[in-house]
Length: 256
Length: 384
Image 1 (cartoon, rainbow over the protein chains, first blue to last red):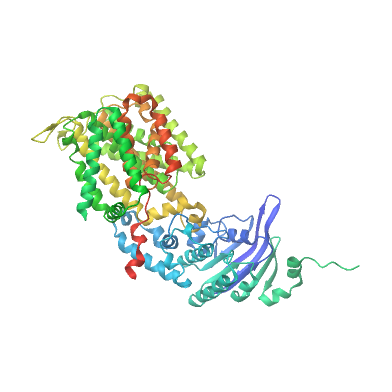
Image 2: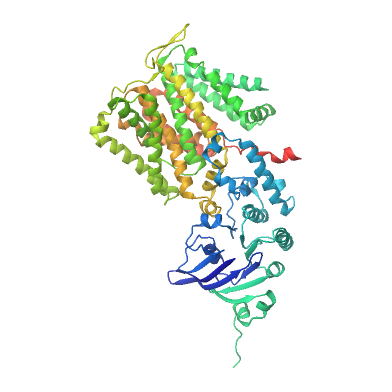
């Protein structure tokens, strides 16, 4: 479904993502881990069209998307969340979710000026409420709050809802559990597993530091270090890989 | 319940008429201070009455504004043909339309524009040149003025796509200056510093709008004609801006204002939305300019200087960014009050400076702050 080949981006002398290859099947969940600064978020920015790659290709269902702008990429079915939270702060929770809907962008001028906006709104609100129900009533009961007034954990949840509202083919989650405590993280994991069960065709790529979270969610793990993919496989396989251990724990001093 | 709204509006109207009628600046100052203190007191001590009135208004916004319009229709009769105050009222409403247009750009879409007067100038000159030199009748020329201003809005929008925030403000200042310089130097078409004189007055259904309006029991000066024309245009503007703002289109503009990158990552074509915001905002400016040219019959470049752009922006900020009633009220107050203090005309710009600074310090949300969309604001109550 998604095939990435030789993806590279260079900022001056720094190669932030270096010849990364990956393939993602429909309905698969891929975890991307690696030390800080290893290029995980840069990889996301490349996939979502914020950065233009120096070389390499990204192919989504036989269409090359590496030159597309981020709005085009989104319309092709890749929705993302942001590591440090980029909600529309002065819009309320419902409106934030509604921004993921296609009809919000495609409404005609005639519909805007003379259409029956009340019904349209009502339908969208119902749809948005339905999406937010994956987190129980946590967000629903705060529908009218401005998103800047939400707690940190709720902001992360809202980010996920907004991305899901777009009904994407591929969902990119950039550190969804950042800033959550252990219990919240565990709840988020089970909620995301529920989403996976509900939407079997949705592919997910998730960047995360919390290893329990990764273990409980993903089918496959990819490890990045200095922009390069150093290992790829199931969680247990990758955990035994000597190079991964080296990247995370540092090289063992040789006794001599 | 709508009786309460009517009463409140009538009281405001009487207060407004009192301010207009009283000639002595000192007494006016006193009245203004008393009203301001009363308003502040009302807001500080959030008593039930005030809250109730507020919710009445927010629930019946359509009714309230149409009633206000109907009440305002009596203004020319009540000031008994005082042509000076009629003219001020006309200008106030034109400013209100400008503030609505600028509000769409700056308040809703977050694109700061300090060159708004340029769009008004373009509209005025389009009507001036078309009616004076080419003999086109006023109404198609007015429509064309709006469209031309929109096109210039797109022209301004194109370089503005690459810059944000302060840099955008600078680009728009430059745009305003360029348009003014063009008007000054294109003498063969625009008349240079002398401007255009003797622009013909519009004719509506065979009735020349520059002749007095005879209502049977009272004969009103010709400004009353324009008063009624402009109030209709203002009502239309409020209607359209309201529809745009409360639609999904307005929501997209809001999202763009909040976070351009996130908006783009959620599928918004920033180019399209920025250009549309500029074009629609500029349209109102162009129409205002056209009406102004037909009403005053004389236009010159200095009428549309940087000061006017700042003035309109201060109206928007004073009324409340992104608030439609705020833009109208801000424009009316900031036109009427300086007129009452004509004696201190030299300090006008300082006066606006003080208003902007104190507004930003003490009520950054303006007189009538933006409220969240009514429909999204209460979905759960309906379901529960």
